[in-house]
Amino acid sequence: MEKCQERKAVLALQPNPMRLTERHFLEVIAPSEKKLRPARKCYVCSLKKNDNRKRIRKETRYFCPDCDVGLCLTPCFKLYHTKLDL
Image 1 (cartoon, helix red, strand yellow):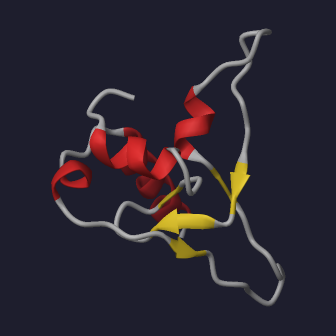
Image 2: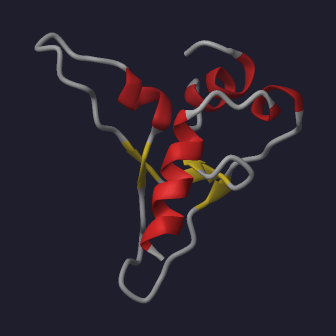
């Protein structure tokens, strides 16, 4: 199970041309037994840095199931699926 999570993380960090060519739709992260309102870190927001040069952590309840990354509704979803270099 640990390898699977590492693999997903590596795949999310690599450039993915499929994310630019296919149709993708946002979905709400489904609740589980432990978390009523689960959230993920937004991939696009986490690439940005604040004034202290630390990465910004913004959590979102939405994700792209095809890419398996957390994304904010706007503008991050559109940016992630249209720009090659983020």
